[in-house]
Image 1 (cartoon, rainbow over the protein chains, first blue to last red):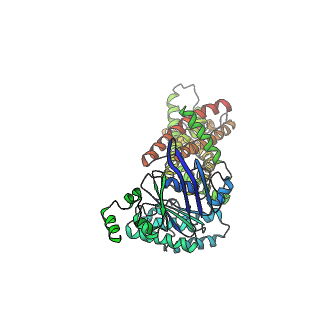
Image 2 (tube, rainbow over the protein chains, first blue to last red):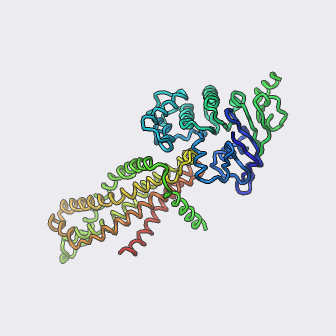
Image 3 (cartoon, rainbow over the protein chains, first blue to last red):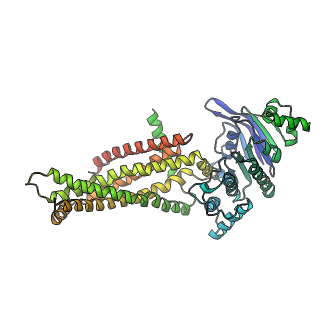
Length: 251
Length: 245
């Protein structure tokens, strides 16, 4: 479980996160949603520890990361898997080397074991016979799956995904969403996904927080979304005629 | 003010390079990869340039020795001295600052804008040390080797040009090469190549690492890296020459 208490972040004098409180539960797909520029990526990067917060506390299962000693932070980082927006695969490494990269640095397993674990991780994301390919030879969906395989190869306790569906077609997006949901439940991870994809919100969101202008405006699950009275959230979710029509039909 | 801020950031950046590596074996593998990328891929270029510069040096020296009182072996002597003292260390390093420097800045800059560096940091890896350390180590190894190659190839180029043009014979050229040889010049030049290697890898890496934005900024960082590392090499050359000679 990851807890965020009174987190505030400034960029110069601009307040990009304003007194955020949130709890991200273990074994659940937690979503951070919001418009572009709302502060959700800053929140995600603060959770990963890539951006220091100016005020507030972030704890990972009771372990505080805000102001943590570098050594302690390093230990927590090895329990994290991160899937970046574009995949962030290392261009100079093959798919197999990308996936086994965390093992090379942090595992004492033999070369054979590392290879087996990397291949198993690739199989888990439904990728086979791509080990020797390079990132430039992969489609967008395959890149995301390789990035997920790399993120889970050390069996992390916490999985962070920054807009995993950006640039993907709807069908591939659903495949990625379902994969992330399955992995979360299978490994009992605390998964936090940053998204503004409506399909993801309604497909896999178990605990959702809505960020608006740097503030947490709303928190709940996907059923509660349909009944929301929060104006900003309603505008965000149901701006399109189609979404509004679906909402009215359901209502 | 901006210069002081950049210099301060560069010093902090250099401190992170020399942090203890996460896993020595992985870093060692990085060094061998960089030796190939930075060194072996530059050998042909260095040899071609050295050959032709050596040849031109010989021809120009001969052209300027119109006084019949001057012995012909001076052609070999001056070619050797120029290559040994300045061309093969400083000029070759300036060429490498262009070739390797732009490569490093654009590679690391692209890694920055595609979040690959953030991916390393998120894994708990010191990205500066991991990405830049092997490049510096490889350049420190390969630049003195390239220097030696350059001197030899330049001398051969000079010899072939001189002999084929009929302006110097084999014995005179060889006598010139042996004349008044000071081994300290080699030490002096190798020390210079080590400093220059540090400059043409670390400055582009610094600019690449601090890229913000997109492809346009990567291009700008690459250009700035080449310009700044070239100027720094020239200044360092002057300072080192003043200290060492």
